[in-house]
Image 1 (tube, one colour):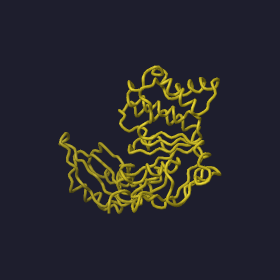
Image 2 (tube, rainbow, N blue to C red):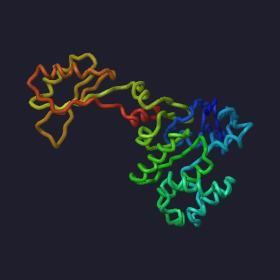
Image 3 (tube, rainbow, N blue to C red):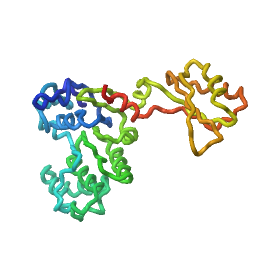
Length: 313
């Protein structure tokens, strides 16, 4: 549905986005990640036609951003990081104003406002001034604005920035509901939101694509080291190292001190690959007189992968 080809943006001599290419399929929820200055917001502004690329092309359906900018914009809804609201207006009056700009006729307008009020959870604040709303409700009003023309594609730049945990969950649920019928692009720093919401992520670093995959595929292909945590009673570290150190996939057997549990031995096994060797470890433990209290394979988090891909060399 969306095709980005060698997209590049310069600001004077600074290259903010450097020849990136990716595709987004219809109905996909894509997370656009990256550290500050990676080029996320610049990319979104080019996707929405707010900025003109220095080179490269963006195609949405059969439209090119250079030749059919207005047609592409008609397919998009865009919520920037700070929702552009008129704070002295009532919520209803503001959304009515947006509907008029979108040339939604009066008979269809009330129906659309009711739909958006239900979808975005703003029924109870429709007749309140926007300047009296919390940040979470302002984001919801901004989301209703972006959805006014029932766009096929929704672009959200940091939609949960500055929200408290309850508001984050509420906005996440709204996005997941919208994602059942829309193509959504989300730029965010909150990695847990990406894991909970997005089917695929594109990670930008210094204007280039560092990764483009599902979160599960990223974990499998990230490389590096993997860990298993075990907790034992009636065991000493030297005996455990002698028993488990002979397993070929184990690089190191490391003791972890925990002040709240002096009787147990906490072990972290450092592995050379994500292969599941827990049966072999269990057989070694079973041959001893140790009591197994805990046995957990540590999953490589998206945060760890993000740091690996975006750390400065």
